[in-house]
Image 1 (cartoon, helix red, strand yellow):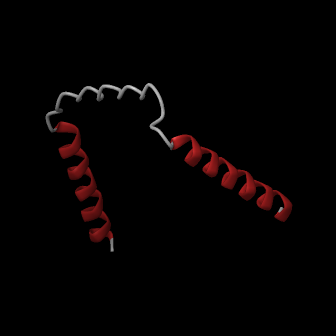
Image 2 (tube, helix red, strand yellow):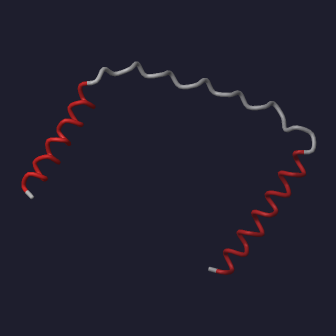
Image 3 (cartoon, helix red, strand yellow):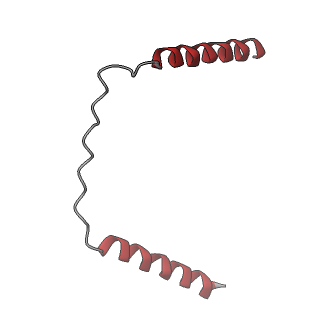
Length: 66
């Protein structure tokens, strides 16, 4: 039992040493932000209103259920 414990500790130390001693790569720069569209595409207003109405109905149902 003690041998298994010592092998486990030795393996953990070995893995830790490999991780700490490997060469580090240069961090990659974050991607450039995507510019927001100037306006919604045609017909999107109706879809947005539909989504907001569905969200309001769901919030009302969840509020009354709680």
